[in-house]
Image 1 (tube, one colour):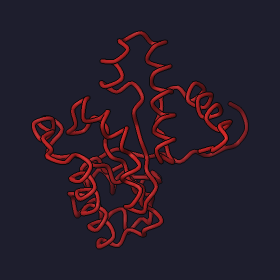
Image 2 (cartoon, rainbow, N blue to C red):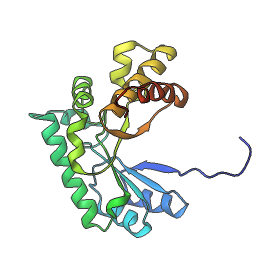
Image 3 (tube, rainbow, N blue to C red):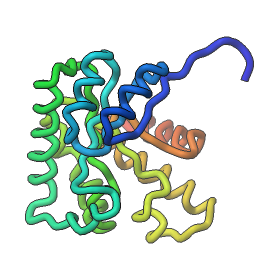
Image 4 (spheres, helix red, strand yellow):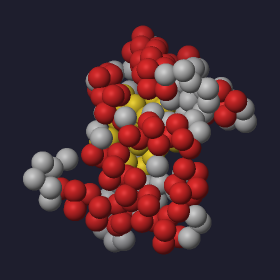
Length: 192
């Protein structure tokens, strides 16, 4: 790559001890994949003053799909993310350090993920930037198969749809393809 540069590093965890260790090693962002369920994790982030991604999920990783039962997907997700946001604030995490991730694929079926993508704008009333990670998710693979070319194109298209619906941060595998889709969308008379 050449030249001096620095990139922020994030760590995905649900455990306070892991977050504390990572922050001590210079990690700048903790991606909490548990919807703010561990007070020790929240305390570590608050003390470090790091960035914090609050991701919606339910249950433990091995059993979370058992919890993918919703009467009102967006209403419940909004309430659960809102409760996690309040726990983060109460723990002392600065509001301007918090980003919300609706947790595509975490305690959500592919059909629920598609509904979430189509209604993503409904989460904007929580007042924090939205981070979306759709790249190569099961919902994408079930739609287009496992071909790397198809996955790249479909993931970039899904990222573009998320950006149109309010996502401000995109987690992607193929930056160039995603950037090309976003450049096209920027050309619309009403840009993103």
